[in-house]
Image (tube, rainbow, N blue to C red):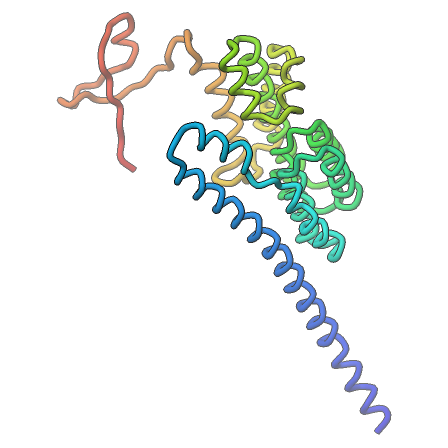
Length: 284
C-alpha cells in the first residue's frame, strides 16, 4: 500500500508543478495586461479631451500640460518585472519602462537589469524594439551591447537595425536643428525630449549619417534573413538605404518603366527637363 501511495504521488507531482507554473504564467500575463490597460485608458482619455478642445490655445495646453506622464505608470510595470523575474512578461515590462519613461535614472536602472539578467535570452528581441524608442543614451548603449554580446542571430540583427535607424534619426534631427529658425526650434523642443534635443544639437549630422548607413549595410549583408514586423530586416534596411541614396531632393529620379493609357511603353527619363503630370499606379 505504501509503495502504491508513493507511486501515485510521483505521478501526480509533475502535473501539480505544471499546473502551478501555468497559473503563475496566467497571473503574470494578467498583471502586465492590467498595467498596459491603465496606460492605454489614460492615453485614450487624453486624445478625447484634445479632440473636444475648441481653440488652438486649449489644444496646445491639453497636448503639453495634460498629457499622461508615463513615469506615474512605470511602478506598475516594475512590480510585474520584480514579481515574475526571468519571464518574458518581466522582460516586456522592463521594455515598456525603457521605451516610455522619461526619468533618466529609472530608464538606466531597468536597462541595466534587462541587459544583465536577460542578455542570453531569445526573448530579448522584443525588448530591442521597445528600447529603440528610448531617447536616453542608455538605450543606445544597450543596443550596442546586445549587438556585440547576444548569442542569438535574430536578436543581434534587430539590435543592428534599430541602432542604425536611431543613428539616422539623430542625424536628421541634428540637421533640422542646424537649419531651423526660431519658430521651428520651438516646435522641435516641444516634440522631442530635452535629452534627445540637447544631444542632437551637439552632433555632426554627416558623421552620424555615415555610421547609420554602415549599420544598415551590415543588416543587409549579415542579418538580411531576420524577420521584422512586416518583412525581413534585410528588405527594410535596403529600402531605407535606397531612399537615402536615390530619392533625396536634387537627385535624379530612378528610372521607372510602364505603359501609358494607349498601352505604349514609356520611361520616366523620357520626360526629363519637361513640366508634365505623371500618374503611375498599379493594382495588387
